[in-house]
View (spheres, helix red, strand yellow):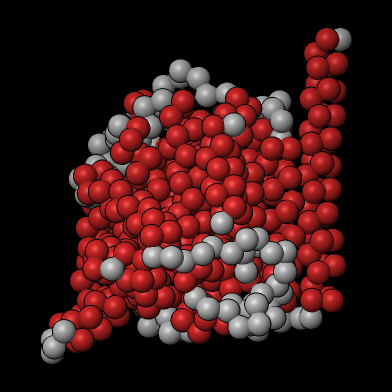
Length: 486
């Protein structure tokens, strides 16, 4: 189990070492934050740092680092490397960047930040892209728990309305409306830190259970162990998603950026929450690798269990590693966690639209103008195939992360800071996103012989365009200074 322990130690060390490097580059200071300066009692509300950390963790995590890590473990223990290195050098940097930039721009959503640094065309694309993504996420995280609740009640002998999935879907959507509409400190601020603690406890319980129940975590093998020989690149890098880097986080970080009392909280709230999510993902990837049998070295046992549904797999692992208490935590995890991520997805969508159309969110009526159509759209999307929605979410999620990192790169350049901090992971994620688009079954489904070179070429072009933009901007600034001197 040396590989697992080393990766765990690297993740923890990454928070204290690389996280501080990120913080030093961005340079938080003592200026007033939007939470203090604006403080509208609805979205801009000062909350304690420990609460912000737990809420951010719950918002960005939910079941993402569990489902994604288990899916990634199908390729074998090489997933440990992506979770560890991706979290430190890409995911943590991504989350910190968006949260910090949002504080510097009055709590602006990621689409508005994109417009400021990448232009109006990209701003429009990101506005539409992020709202669609958020509504899809919210809907996915409503349909899954609704089906599970009705199934559990049916298995316990329940009948009638209580076993109807649509009944529970309606209940969840009504809750979404309430949580999206009311001030952030009324429900989210009071109860979500508790659910964040539960998410951590569940991961710790699984980790301890692996050791106490005699399971052995395999060492890292740099080989493709997927039973269907699905290529590691780029499929594993997209499947893990929230466990390493996720564009969804770019929509969530501004929520907490509007509640920070100091920019210096960014290290713990944004980078720290992402490292914590990476640790949770590492534990679940280890559990998927340790609990289930392999055939000829391939992860056939895990793949077969996942075929029965991700929630079933989570339930099975919790039961095998923790016994009775594991069942309770598993039910809490697969029901409460997605719901709490779903409602903040809709809340983020409301804020993106409010920023888009400059709608003041303090008056109740103006919040209603946005909340009602959003939830109606969610109700309509919930009728679509769950699997199809999730597959498109996976790709769009990583594409959003790519755009957010390029936005941060331009921010750092314009502020004369080390932009390679974000430009390197932005280039990498560009290759991931474009390659996936060309070879994934739900996208163009071309051969890897075609998709691989296109993905690498696209990443090189994006990097070239960024460098060209910096040189052009640098030339303009130099020319201005010379004219001013003359």
